[in-house]
Length: 436
Image (cartoon, rainbow, N blue to C red; front, side, top):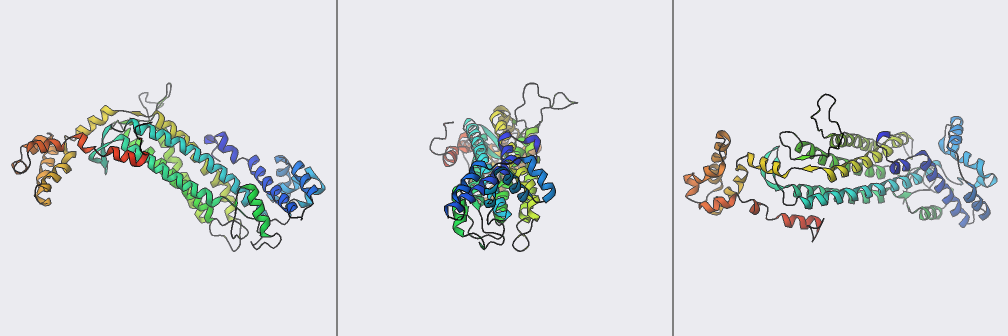
């Protein structure tokens, strides 16, 4: 488990204490349901509910002998309650308890991640609105393309987080199932009504059909959803890392008072938070691959998935919990340099407005091929000679024979280029995109 990144809340969900608590929840819910059905004496069910408890050290001591965790657990609980313990685990197989309890843990972990995602969305929205009209150069292939705003870049992040949230809600539903169908899934010892009653008590949906286990495509759906979320966070982090390059210098992740960037170079302010997010995303993606490999089990069940899940589920949730909390702090505190963005925009001497000039020529009847050639030759000359693009266009006889100088000037108007930013924000944030 990723101890360094473990927050008490998420760590608690995946602790040994919580795991056994969840097992006990399932066992007692089953006993209560059996009592309601007249199978277990009501007094014994009440005694179990009142006295059932466990000691982790005792469970581990028993497991050293039994080499079976669920038997060790039920034995330890039975020692606490005496004779009524004969009804504990009545008609159940281990996976009835393990898979149903795991659903409780995964659901709780999903809920915590959803809370973290909501906090990140608020942070991104706030910064997007702040920089809604902050002009910067958009880059494709790492090369200057056309004008955009930093707020639009952040709006894109916000929409992606919203999609990730929707996926996690769907995955949460997919894993929120329980099963008490027995050793091969045919309810040989308990009626399906008992499973339904237990799931209702636990807030789960009965799995319509199961083998000895809940099928692992459900868990793989969750893990691939987590991997997609991690990939998005990595994407955002890589963007900040790119914009923080000294040569670009448009954005920096926060650098606290007293923080050190390098043991050898006192001047360094490195994007270590974003780099950490990049690295942890690799881990979550790898865990998703392991979850996919868990889908194929022998016949009605083997335990090849079990050891894997004990690692990949806690580690992925803990990693993402940390990634979301850290990236939220990065977004809230990131330093934006609008003047540097404008300076970089102007470094290309206006060639990024070439597309507007091309369209104006096309509107006036010039073939696309000729218009492209006329504009491109001036753009290439601007690059080669290090001179502004606009004067070259105004001096080009072919272009001036078609376009009035005022039209060329308008092609370089930042406001005209950004006229639809409000529409984008309305799409992403709703009717009041200027309210943080």
